[in-house]
Amino acid sequence: MDLVEFTSVVERHGQQPTLHVDVGGVALRYLTPNLRCLWRVQTLATKEPVTLQWLNRIPSGACLLDIGANVGMYTVYAGAVRKARVYAFEPEAQNYAVLSGNIRLNELSHRVIAWSAALSDEIKFDKIYLSDGDVGGSCHTFGAALDPNLQPAKLPFTQGCFATTVDAVIAAGAMEVPEYIKIDVDGLEHKVIKGAAATLKDNRVRSIIIEINSGLDEHRVIVDHLAALGFRHDPAQFEKAQRTEGFFKGTGEYVFER
Image 1 (tube, rainbow, N blue to C red):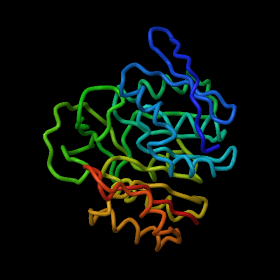
Image 2: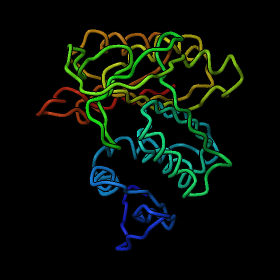
Image 3: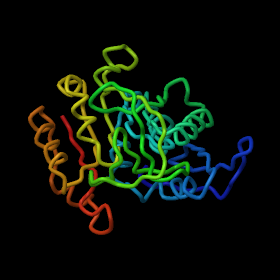
Image 4: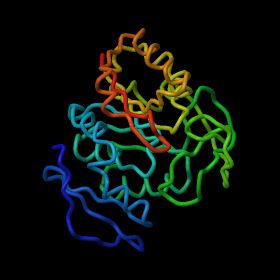
């Protein structure tokens, strides 16, 4: 199941091209309105192999919370391949539109729902600062113009945005306690964790995959905090997953299990 094979067919859904992917006999379809979205589909098997391996261990029908879903590469994968019930959060407007389109395109609305909101450590209206204006983009930050190393950055675009917390979403009854949580918000993961304080104490949460920047104090604290809550991790797994060069050097996926 780790192998992702591509069909050679590029079709159109309405006015937008799509690319079809075959995963173990399950056909996935993704909207590809630009080259960046096309690249995301083409690198599905190689960009974050640890994430795919983690998703493939999710039992059929389990509940996944996908925080920082972007255009829905892993949201769709989890819903279609793993038959997971998925709650996906993506605050950037263009990404959210394609995410929602991918859910519809794969006929997953009966078990996948996407929210156009940020998850953070407080409930408030603010701006989301965008690294660029193209759909499929990443490295956007809510509440302040920062790069993934949490340094001030000149980000060229902004959108109005609403943020809430994992705990508040569950308390409102909009989502059940997820068994599996994926967090990838390009630097602000520590705020998501803080806003999920009550949820993470619940033993129904079985596993978390989170992108950690080993160069940030705020992120190193996450590892100790989750360990104190009973989550185990393998340091060798992170060492293998982290990037060894480029702007994201020292960043990689940590897998925590209960």
